[in-house]
Image 1 (cartoon, helix red, strand yellow):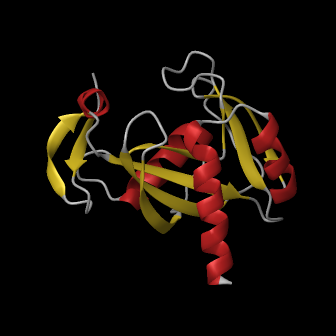
Image 2 (cartoon, rainbow, N blue to C red):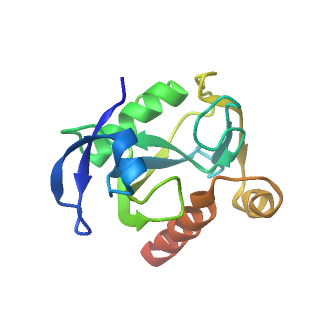
Length: 166
């Protein structure tokens, strides 16, 4: 069954409940929660999506995440997605939200950060490969590897946010 999401407006206010498939097909704003995962040494977790994924198969990503279900907060959805995709139980910290129009369909994107253990247990149905990269290594990979359309933009916004806070 297609997951239910909340259709939202340009101010992230709920307009109603729709299927994610319908939101994507119609180009309606809905919510997605993602997390940039760092380890204790500051490296960033990068992963490659499984080849059978319907959205961007085989592409690399800087974030782990997915749709915010009806009634969930961004933080609850981010925590659920980390548990499902990486086997990690934690409550990521919401950094910012932004309308993202560079992905599969337009959506509000809640970008989180979490410091997680080096040892993750990726779901093989979702993740084909993963590794920890330094920021320098990630910058290099972003120009050489095939990342999802929003990875570069979100990573740049994430770095700008971190710089502004320090």
